[in-house]
Every structure is written in structure tokens, then in C-alpha cells.
Length: 435
Image (cartoon, rainbow, N blue to C red; front, top):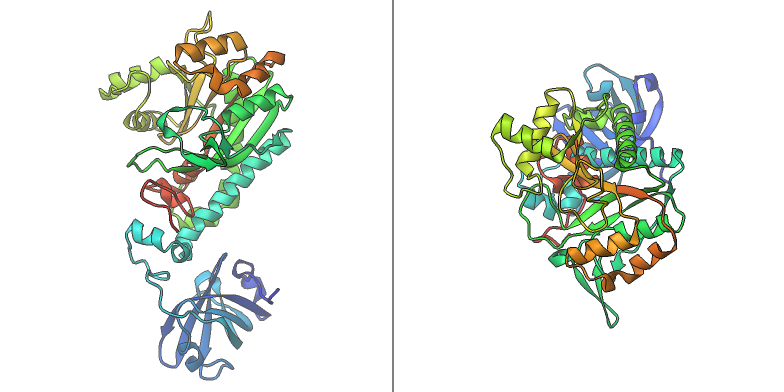
């Protein structure tokens, strides 16, 4: 490995010590007899001060191009005038890789470029510290969530991306050529998660991707989605599933608040960690709040629209609750437990809203194979298309439930981004397949 110290590790305690940093030429300021070079690595930026009397003089710095990759060795000097409180007095400088041309978008300065141009040049866009911070934050969030589930004895699994049928069916499937068979990109690992619970994997999670062939034009949707999926067996009801969702999310947000302070500051983002229990309101209660408080009635009487979610988010944020559950959606997918005698809700399906956006859907599943087949037939789903799934229910399946959380949406909400594509390194939308 090339000799270097990450910039974030060079502090005022390093005053007077020799160190070597390496990274891209981020910026340069020429004051005549003094030239300031700003070097950027993945942890931050550091100022290098070249004077006529230093071993590396101003002319050497002037010869550098924007985004050249350099290695600089020198003496650390603590000074309040320098960004970060330290600067480097250079003793040697080498160009590891010279940039062939000036970048088409501005990396160092706060110059706006439209989202499409930035995504076309994503490899340059993510060099901007405020964009890079999004993906450091994302890494922290996923690592923290994974840490919680491992500590709670959940096993990580890996389900297929290719399948013979979708979990939800319809026109939202991407067909693929799979030898001489019909196949599709996975909409969700839902059916496979249930197969695994039936097989004895009663506490499992998966970090994977799902695909939705929707013709959308919103700031909340993409065609390829990163998901954190969870399933657990031997539940009493959907509340057990919500308990897991609540505890894991609270831990994840708390860890991000502690470990990603620099990234949140770069993004000017305030992180809401829900310390109180998440309110759990029924679907009917949600509709009542929307109509009575805001005069809003969703067009679809069986679902909340994006405006409804946002209004509910505002309603509960004012009361100190950034996260809420809405429980009991009517007319749900066949795999949800629904129309249970004695229940005062239509189904045991819930959505989790965080800051007014749906982050996850989940609930208790139907584990009775006869009821499952009946619901499928009532919904016009041919059980013959799902025999591989239904077969597992013939050998004893514990009551179970789970959910799928959208990682991209979680990052969007935590970072305070306007569009979910900002939270994805290389987003896939109906009009974007490259880079």
C-alpha cells in the first residue's frame, strides 16, 4: 500500500510531526508568494501551504491540474487559520495520476448542476464532499442495522434475484431470458423468506435488491431498490413484528447520530431519533386524522397517498413522533393474514412512516395453507403459479411475520434529500440505465 495517513486522522495533536497524505487536488488558491493546495481524500480535505522558502514551492503547486492524484509528505502545523485547525508544510510532492482534462462538473466549489448532468457524471459527482457524505452515512446506517440483527441472533440469508413468479404479480415485473424458461427479476424476497421460516430459519434478514417495472415520475421511486428484509417465526401477531422494526430502527438511528456526526454536519441534516414508543394507529384512525385535521381524502380508499403520508408525518412530528405505524390496510396481498375473526382491523399489515414517508411495509403472514389458497383464489391469483411456495405450507409452518425496509428511502429521510436517486450511487429509473 502507498504510504499515507487519512486526513481525518491528522489533528492538532500531530503538530510538528511528519506525515504523508494522498488524494485528489481539490482546490488551489494563489496569493503570489504563497500558494494553498487543498488535498481531498474520502475522509475530508487538508490544506498544504507552499512558500518560496519551502522545499515544495509555489511553482510546483501551480503546475498541478484539478483532480490530479497526489502524494504529499511534510510537517504538520497546527493553526486556527487553517480549515480543520491544521495544515501541511510540504517537503515532497509526487503526482500519482494526472487528470487528462478538466472535469465537466465542479467538484470543489458550490456550483449547481442539474441532477441529470450530475448522475451522468456520477463518478465525479461523488467526489464532492457533500455527496460523498451521503454514502458514508448510508454505510453507517446499513452497518448499524446489521449489527442490531446479528446481536439479536438473526441469521443473514441470500435469496434469488431471478424467480419464476413475482411476489406481487401484475405488470410490475421485469421479464428476463432464462434459457428457454420464463423468468423475472425479483420484486421481493417475500415468498423465499416464508419458505425459509417454514424450513426452520425463524429469525432471518437479508440485504438485497428488488426490481419494480413501474412507469413512475416521483421523487420517491426507482426501478431497482435496495432492501433490508426481515422475517421471524413464532410470533403472536403483527405487534411482535413492529416491536422488532421499532427497536432495530431506533438503534440504527442512534448509532448514526453518534458515528456519522461529520457526515450529518456536511449534509446540514438534523437526525430525529425517536425515543418514545412509535404511535400505532389503525388505517381508519389515519384516515380520520387526515380528513378532520387537513380535509384530505386519499383517492384510493384502501391506501394512503404520498400527500396523506406527508400530512400524517407533520401531524405526529408536531407531537414529538418522527416515526409512526399505520396498521390494518384493507384488501392486502394474499400472503398477509387478514379478515381474522375477532380482529377490529381488516388485515395485520402495517406501514412504517418516518418523517412523512413510507419506509417499510410488513405484518403477520398467513400460515394456514387452506386460508392462503382461498385468499389467492379470491384475489384472482392462480395457486398453480405458486406451488413451489404453497408446498412448504403442507409440512407445518409456525405463525410468522416480517417486513421489507427501503434502504434508499431511509437514507433519503435521514440525510434530508429531495429525491431518492440522490441516495443511490447509480440509480435505475425508467429513463436511466447508465452509468
